[in-house]
Image (cartoon, rainbow, N blue to C red; front, top):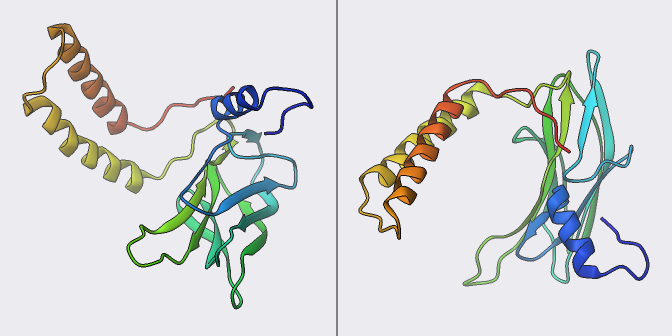
Length: 191
């Protein structure tokens, strides 16, 4: 997200974060742009049998980059690996979607001794077929099971709250989340 000349960099940054135009990184700079102009945080509505997607993902860093990948609903659908020592890799991609999907890019670079894994990951672009959210039942079940196990900690833990109502509110939200994850996601629209 680019601001107008003379516009505050902070205001432009804050607007981008609110819009979901975010890349998480501990090293490489990563850019994802679709041919139709969609960027991370965008929602693209579509109808029909399939939705073609084309664009590029570019990773740059002062150290070598290993690879750039494009993911759809968590599955790698395109990959470009470095040839030799590359500090910039561009993955040109073309694919098609058969249903609603989130599509994001990620990049990896080698770590030096003692460093964590060096990586970058964009927020997704949501491609909504007939307004339906992306849905993978097996992923939803796995997330629900993980949440259920983690929620048990909050129910049993002697967490200290300034007000007793705060504990009750937390437990109510934990229960709401469990209920939500047990079902199919509801149709939604991003602003």
